[in-house]
Amino acid sequence: MNLTVIGTGYVGLVTGTCFAEMGNKVYCVDIDEDKINNLKKGVIPIYEPHLATMVIDNQTKNNLFFTSNLKEALDDSNIIFIAVGTPQADDGSVNLSFVHAVAKQIAEVISKDSLVVTKSTVPVGTGFEIKNIIDENKVNDVNIEIASNPEFLKEGVAIEDCLRPDRVIIGTESEKSAIILRELYEPFVSNHDRFIFMDVKSAEMTKYVANAMLATKISFMNEIANICEKTGANVQSVRLGIGSDNRIGYRFIYAGCGYGGSCFPKDVKGLINTSVEKGYFPRILSMVDEVNETQKRIIVDKIISRFGNDLNNLTFAVWGLSFKPQTDDVRSAPSITIISELLKRGAKIRAYDSKAIETFKKELDDENIVFTSSKYDALDDADALILITEWKEFRSLDLDELSKRLKQKIIFDGRNIYSKRIEDEGFELFQIGC
Image 1 (cartoon, rainbow, N blue to C red):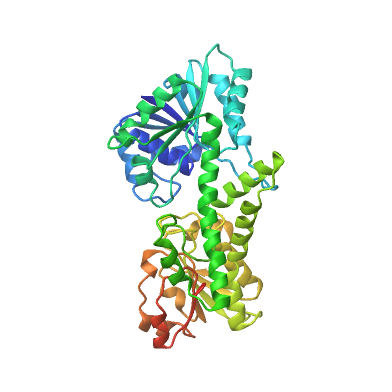
Image 2 (cartoon, rainbow, N blue to C red; image 1 turned 120 degrees about the horizontal axis):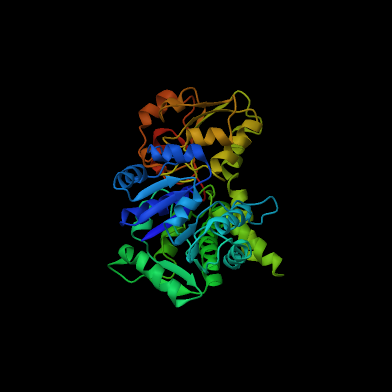
């Protein structure tokens, strides 16, 4: 099949590359000329395991093309995926300006009957808004059908998620569109039929609800961790106790210093905003968001409890800046909140992350932050270590190296990955809910 993916951000680039991997001819379109030129050279704007190799390989096979010329792409394809950003507006609503702009651009150049599929995470009803914009502005007499095909990619394992999805949700209003998308996705689910068909609005809602449900599990467990601390219980034991119930399971019930990324924070707020617009106040979702924002400061509270509110003349080593391992994404990352709060109180920071230093600098670059090229170099002259992101390289500690480099043998473990046994070696270990 020949298809166009509009937007070469995280979702668009991964999706377009995986479609090309299955032998389709894919045009990835973006208005950013520099990004397009870099992609043609195999320069990838994000870190995602295996993505760069696949981009280069599929360009070599003439399956994958990068262009800023939308007309060129649409003249050679009749399936159009919209994968542009839907950032959060200041009031918590979803900013659809990029989606609406793309719909108008499609209308101005489209020359054949086409299926327009929304891949971006959008509020319920956006698909029909897209169709109306195209129909009202189209230059040529063409027929447009719409569909919703939400993505469920996890950063760090997005290629695997895309090539071997656990479900493919397709929201359509016609059998014809359903058949086209089934045919497109069949190579991805050849071993099992994992299609779920529904109407467009339900598909749009499903993406929000999935992320809101996962965010709820995280915030719920963080709330329980805080209660455990007050009562003397251990949240790690509690997690094992409840996770063994197959109605609950073990996934997304780890206590920590809050969730981040581009999806959970934005989508929870987006669903709250949609609900309020329709006259319903979602109490649980509002508290999920509030608990998470509070949880991002839990490590700061522990540091203040240990050292006092004045952190002048203190230096903290930080391990991990990305919102999760296997990505360089720092959007809404707890590291931004934690480091900002420490800087406000006069602290100095020595930070290390194998992938996210450059993206972090774009969000927060301060003269009192030193970025190091190795995890142990970050410890030099630091008064304590703060673990924020649970990269694999942080899991095994060389306690001798920590003892030599840290001024004080103190660790704040924001992900509960270390054993209490290190306290037997003279370390102070501060965890969440333990």
